[in-house]
Length: 143
Length: 169
Image (cartoon, rainbow over all chains, first blue to last red):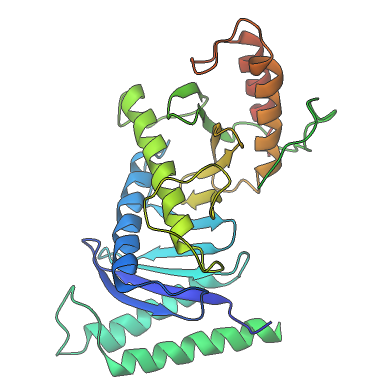
């Protein structure tokens, strides 16, 4: 196994626009338009899933289990959604998403040159994110 | 492609050790999006009228299926987003979970979709959905008075499903 526990990471802003997308080794390239479409599709399905809830207080899909992947989604209080696509049954993804949210707060939101709701282009964020994902990969291999 | 061999109901349904009251509701759609059956056991929150609710549910499943087919990280040729696919074609999904409910989904080769909404703590329900599909085949499809494509009104089917879901883990 080449240790590709995580396939990709998406960050979408509160209006459904894709502001960050990173691929960590899925088969078959996805072009930019497709990633944008998938992001906004996810945004609307997340909203619909809240409407269909049988009880009050639903905050949208947290885990989607497909035939070949799992999708873990985390929504911050301000409406920014983070989701990772990973191998089925990968553990500790909630913790990773929370950590990515921390990195986002530290290296993107506190960057004075970052414009809110716009695509993320911050070198330090990229760097720390890569480290976090690699660390997670090593941790999952050593278990 | 999933295939459900044998026409007999499995002699014993999958093991159920539940305390009951886990099921919220169940939908059965045919491949045209007609809601054949809607059962409701525990649904305090209703935001829409029944017909709109069924449409929204079918729409969500349709979009989620095109989403997963396009997202599939293991295949090279994924086609275009939103192009309708035949049952069993492309990567599908079997459940999703929110903080208030879990939705389990199964599609048969003929395009019958069975959706079960339960409490979020419920485990894997794939076997249970296959069992419900078997009940559908036995009690509905084999009923000579049933016209395919029309809403199901078989008393025996309803009571059996109610009984089964009540005992679901």
